[in-house]
Image (cartoon, rainbow, N blue to C red; front, top):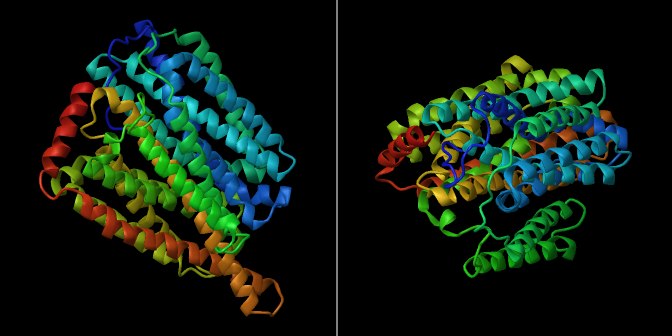
Length: 499
């Protein structure tokens, strides 16, 4: 989700002619839509890709995780690179890399090539997204125009999520899952050509420096964290391949935290995350992002494998959920948050999402869409929309102008890293539950396998519901009890002033 307010970088002004700035916004919004869309479009295509390439269930989460991990762990670095080498050049480099890696993903002839290409897409997006967001800020300096520009930017993000699932379904069913990747290439090429013609070089922030040790520490730590959870699908928790990587991850991330207190130009200044409300919001975002990625992944397999839906029908089945997510977003920030404060709003969103996921965990092999699947998806989507928008607004509230980019990148990183860790852990739970069911029911046959797979999906949905219960008892109590309304109203005023 895009931040609610972005303050221009001091000393930087738009280099574009006034008559071209709306065309520039179109290019930047297309890039934002493309980044968000790529995070969802592969979910629908994943079962077809798995059948085509023949990789096991234990590896399917890496198709999603490879993109999310590379994107989330390198977002902060991408913002620093844009400052050092120029936003225009970083933006175009990200587009070029995204186009090339999307072609490789579409041409993948094996599991390893597809995972590597997806990781390349995530790396390219980590360059692309922060640079594009910065370009919006420096292109629109008039207050009223900035409000319109960031409204369009936000709509592009929402459209990416809404379009990704049905588009991926249509492409997969009527062409091939590979076209879900080729579509990204075509969009990136168009945006690259338009960006080359429209964007002018802008001054660099020469005070920025690259925190190389911090980048290595956090990137390695996050990789080990996700790999450790993923390895549990093929190794017991007592195996070094599991707990060893998790232990190394903890050590690296603790060292990263220590280094950020010593570094002259820290990758993540710790005061960004130590604010009580912001810290609570980041925790909630981490948990919610796990639910977003996990719900799309396992609900897709349930709809296609358990209910027998085709890819296109599966994509259309998600539209009510996306509608609930988009519909509750403005309601949460414009009405509920100023009136009731963060505790009540985040708690209600968590309760709604937990209820929807609990319903998903009760669905059977013959559940009707209208009476069973639809209510669960809508309830889940409404809860996710409430939490994501409210926590994103609160996570960027009260940040100094000089730190607004870092705060925004931190929000994005928490979302995508949370998603990658969540998918890895949930896939471990699901595959272990499926294997346990098969071991306990030695009757051969397709029906037994179907029930075994369904038990794995149910386990994943139950864990996701439990994550929101944890959110109720961990993140929600951290929010300040008093002054919430004043803080939210101040954010609204600041949005008006700087937008």
